[in-house]
Length: 470
Image 1 (cartoon, rainbow, N blue to C red):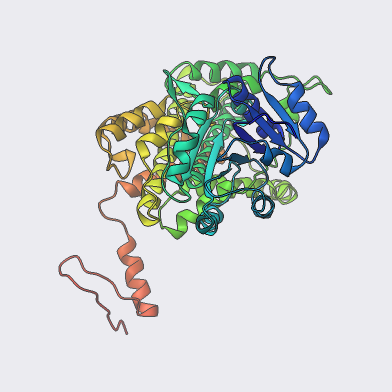
Image 2 (spheres, rainbow, N blue to C red; image 1 turned 60 degrees about the vertical axis):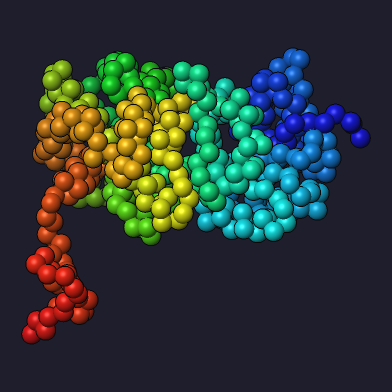
């Protein structure tokens, strides 16, 4: 057996796993990867930068045996049973003080279970979110590790080396105890769902109401990306409108089906928000609309039955486009606010000690939801680490007040034009409810007490009360 002692091992040499290893090798680390597919193992070695130390193997034992001790092993395999299967295969081969990292999109409850199961064996287990796609993995992702603090210290230099950088600062930090890393990544993905839905609604308004073509849309999104809406998702959206289809010659976006896929992480965000509980209606709406997009046949039938007449404003003005930009900016802040409020609540309820300032700091580069807004959020959390919701920050309030009027105007126009802007209107509804000193839920409490004796509280005295309404 070869005597080279490798610094880091990877299980799963798909696009993400191999790119992550190649990135690490470029930073001077000796890396070894395992995959049952011999072609993937060879491909890893063939794609390595000349002069780096990279090896691919097809047996788990060969990889484990060649790792420097205590070992650092990362998995990038599908969530669920495959992760447990890999762990069981590893246990006879590894030793006390070795570190196992799950870099996939596992549900945080599974990660918490694995941490507890491996702790008595002396094995350090970390759940780690990785965002940035295949290009991020190769050039620098945003990395969200959580769990065993001692394990974090052992891998910190390596992860800082491979992560994205913003002004020289690595986009990786310790996210907190137990399953914090995967929890933060889950909420990241929920915010991602919401922003993508909001962008699609802005696109729908400009295309169907303002009658803008793909070139105009590309130019508009490019301009937006050069100002306050600067973000990765706005940037790639501008590029999407210009891509031609190799088959038809049409713009590719126009021949792509409107049935959207998902891998479940957005749904997890909604489900866990309800469990906490914390309100994330923009994220909930984004998840629901991906589901509704799958009911294509029913939507076509409903369209034929109700025949919605789209009210167009031929060739909208710059003022119309600015209103949509402001609406998107407003609602994007709101969906970040919901996700970050969820992390704040979960940190306390689940005892994870999630540092929100570090969360937004590492999201500034490498990840899918990176945005110039995150710099503003970072400053807000640095000023007030106990901030429960970013909407309570005065600087952010100024941005909301500046764009709120146009967000309402766009929603009104969309409703009149029969264009669904469900995420945008949900964002406005959340904002209005959050800013309401008094909500109408006193009536709900009365109803609950009337039919179910569920009791209520009063505004004029302490205690729990019940009334015989009959």
